[in-house]
Image (cartoon, rainbow, N blue to C red):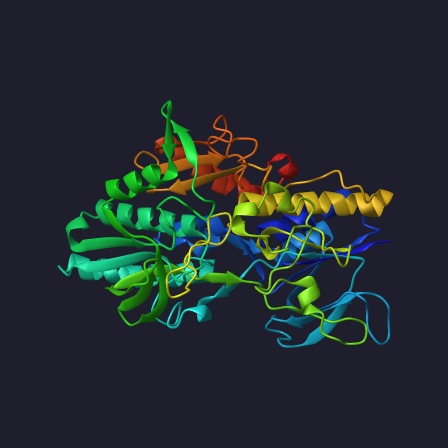
Length: 485
């Protein structure tokens, strides 16, 4: 009998647990550890944050589903990994701390044969003074944050109806933040809502980003086919912002937030401020903060994790210059090189290097997006790790058949730009591969047959359809496994 422990129940961890449970018989044990009692479909938090969906339309409780599936569910956060066991046993184990209201803070150990780290990121609001919920800005990174954001936004709408003009600042809240796409989507939805209420004359919308060029999105931008022409994502993204009346500040690293004002540095080394009445800024991401110890209790965190807290996998972490990187540096099976029974998926794995060129100001501040691993890549990596572990358990195979390098994987992104069956819009973009391959595609870095972009009502219909399809999949409804990641 094998015991597989999955840390995290987001898109990646939930996907991995679902496929393992489906493929392995009940004589094998599957355990999921997650600090939240809910699964949440994070891409739709954007709509919660503008009042178009309620919190319960984007989440559901994990306990009943996992009970039905025969998965042992622990509402807890992972604290330490002991990959060699400890004083009383050679069995590897992970230490967890309960987050359940019934026994909050209680610590226990769970042994494992295989461990999947799918914890996702820590939302590192602390990296920027004054950033985040409870301070001076808002967030849509979780459904709880999105609800708070909507409550504040409703007050803003009331003030605008009473004749007050407000300034809205949307974007990234740290020089090294990622997830520009989520903030971009929120900006477009906010602009659409304001326009629908005929309040555009009472609002000034500003997009602030650490991207060198608008439309970089942490993947070095792209060239896309649109209407028979080849268009850089810079032109695509700038035209959309302009259409929605949003001005932009680029190459900007937010360093501090105070009430109604952000402080930021630009790549030319200049210091600036921007005032606001409402701000939604995405924080920096870091690893969840787990530690690791060998059987003698010696700290080996640096063996399992990169300095940013994300887990090392089968990637090249040699630190070669950016100009020398290759798609071969990227992982394909997401296995830790030191402990072969440990894997990391989704945002939890450490990228070997940035995709966008790292740029520093004269003051030495790195102002550049971190590599994105959300959404589709998270689901795909969760599935391929699950299938490889199934092969290990059933057949003892170590020649992994299932691989998913971001240098050989495509991704689709649908950015909603308004909500409505007849008036909604969305910008749809696909890229292949996610990490550009300049050797195979020397002109554009990507295959333009599969790297395309369009905007229109049909994209919104697809976005809305995917919301319901992926929740259908996540809830384990009939034939869920037939839906792609």
